[in-house]
Image 1 (cartoon, one colour):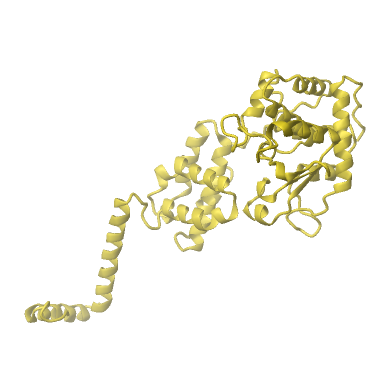
Image 2 (image 1 turned 135 degrees about the horizontal axis):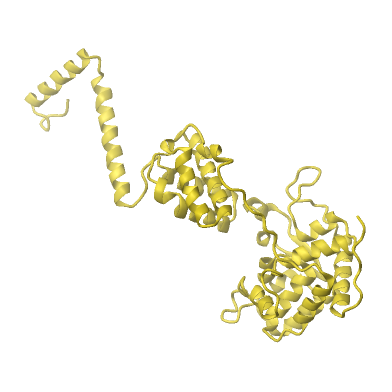
Length: 372
């Protein structure tokens, strides 16, 4: 009933009478007090979160942010996690964020997704749907909801139109591209980056971020650290480094660049800030200036060019090409990355590829497509 003198005798009698009345009606006064105290605490917490601009406990946004912080960020790269967060913040939270997760239905989610589709970004809509599905699955596991309504939207969105990255695979046109690269009068770092892209067909980001410490030019080898590869968070942390055998031509390109950037850390530093690599737009912009628009060739297109022509023109085994491309293909034991790296075969392939590019650059007769 309280303590004396804070609670007077008359007030204690009133509380006792009320407790007897509740008992006579089958209600436990102690349980009722606890329930009232809990409700008051919840209301106070809700007010505090509202004042702080935070979503209500158990709401779609609250559960989604908890999933992002405790699950998603631990699985994927920082960039991937940021992109997922932005997609939810821009496309879902403004409409569904404050609603209790258990109250969100499939039509509600679909309405959000249709706004994304209306902007012409169908692929983004599918990614938003996938993120919502993961939030609901996490909500089921943590007791915030009982089902995943995003699973009901499997056939509710237009299919993603797959467009392959622009790449030149016609030998005569490849020769023109290589001659244009050699005659390029722009920045030597950009020219060298494009030449290395053609000779090694690694991802543009892996080329742009290359450091001199990764190269052993005497051994003609480039060792790209696992954390710089396109992998999930676990793959970056535990996957093997990617060994890239270098042809004589690739070594020559790098040795030619050493007097310009070899005193620094980065092989391809930016003009304004040498502590940062050239931007992701630099290589594509250089291709545009050379007369190769985005519908015909991109920096990433050197990978498709090599994959196609190595198979069709030089008859290289697909598994050797895939190993050089550093694609994540499980091996026979189901490991995430195949340790059978075909090092000897890839070294031979890389030199044959560089020699073949030289013949195309000089306008020599091209090798016909091999019969399947």
